[in-house]
Length: 77
Image (cartoon, rainbow, N blue to C red):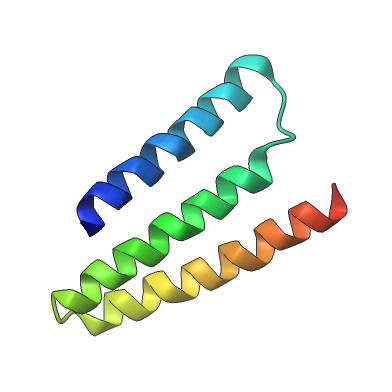
């Protein structure tokens, strides 16, 4: 289940990144950052399930940072 969710989120991130690169319109980059953070959270949960706690905590910290950055993007744009 988590693997499928990770793949779906990564496709969404790639689509937003491709749209931004092709059109040179980066106004949706904060949404891409939000979905990338969710992908990091899912990857962290996968690492916790594999009993690799160090990588799990690293992914959770990256999720929190990207969540903070995307919320700033939502508020400033």
